[in-house]
Amino acid sequence: MNRNRLTGSVLALIGIAVLIMAKDLSAPVIEHDPGPRFFPSIAAAGLIICGLFILVQPQKRTEPFLTPEGWRRMGWMAVLLIGYTLGLIYSGFLIATPIALYITIRMMGQPKSKYLTTVVVSLAVTFIVYYVFQELLMVILPSGVW
Image (cartoon, rainbow, N blue to C red; front, side, top):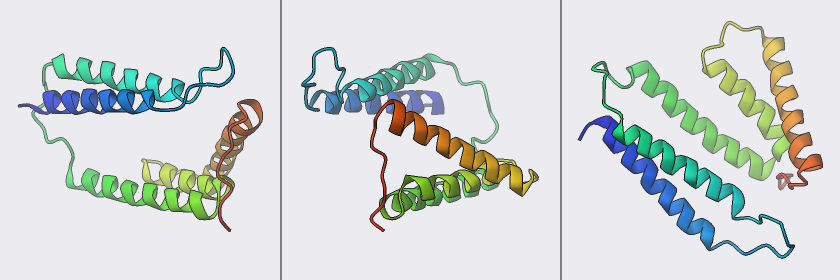
């Protein structure tokens, strides 16, 4: 089994699992409210569709999937995501997100960008996302235990 078939199958299976779990979420109380099932169902449909497209796509590359540097970067990104999750729990969205964004920008090929530009972009993205979710969509973001 080539990499495309494995990846496509796994994505489609994850999408099906998410769709099944989304059906167990509570139904909306207000009429015409999509409720908590809406976004997970959209994500599940996207995973299934992308998985099926990857599944039928022929494999063209013969070079390695990731170089040793790529594997190292992916490992550090996993550590960053775990740290970000802990940061959301303990310090909240407004503190953990700009730090995680700053580190992500620096890790993802922009180490030569200016520090001030990276800080400004991290803060701007954080406050835009905060405003959209907290004020416009009225979604409560984590405020942290501390």
